[in-house]
Image (tube, rainbow, N blue to C red):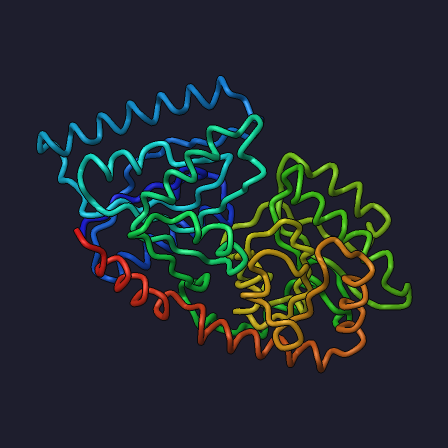
Length: 375
């Protein structure tokens, strides 16, 4: 099939890395591995983070104009028309302003991966965007969900011919090869003692939920008994870096802020660390959590969104209620005290990631789902 791909929140070729960009690229790779011809249909970013009706109206006009041009190009033969339109990640701040109209006018199936429905946005500054999300879901032939906690709000919004399909978040390149030299080399680089457990956190430093996760992590570390040995490496950067630095100031000697790192460096960090830590405030599911487990790391995280779909509490990591600093600190201390348990959780996490979260394991299911749609 020829598939038009669109990600209204962040284009898969956007310059700034994020879990959202990563998942968009993985979806394209999975569809292509199924033999489909996937092309990027638009880079229009529809996000309005401020609830500004003027900006929303402007973006809606841009979307409508692009839909007109796209359809005209297809009908005139200047570009080959797609057999299917595939949009990734719709929510009230970033609705799909192009796909539903193009699919309707070209008479092709409209598919959505990862959509959310926030009924409390039915009124207020994002009311029009919320309505567009509901309209898109009603028109979708297939909605793919990665987060089991989204389904109760999303599935009832589908039209009579729509289908909801749950698939697991996934990674490419599995299994990740182990690198026993990574730990000693990183410890030597950062001046960390060989017998000191190395914690790792990975996350953009955006003001809001990301910096809140960092704040909770810093506070949890303050509640771990002072005699515990640990060091923390943090990979990430952004506009909230100064806020993050202030949070970790009490732990300055033990915390290493590494800034933005490339994929190769990040892979080394996963291989070098002992425990992955992330409070996961308002996290959809967390690609870094999955990458950590695929690298053999036990995870200490918040029980929120689709995180339990990735991290099996007590089997591959330890989960605590979202935002519960005391519980998070307790789980971390438990692993610091019992490194045998930590290693066992990490080994099971690697096994589960390789078995259930590889691109190869998902690609066939995804390809079969889109090929089954009536054209």
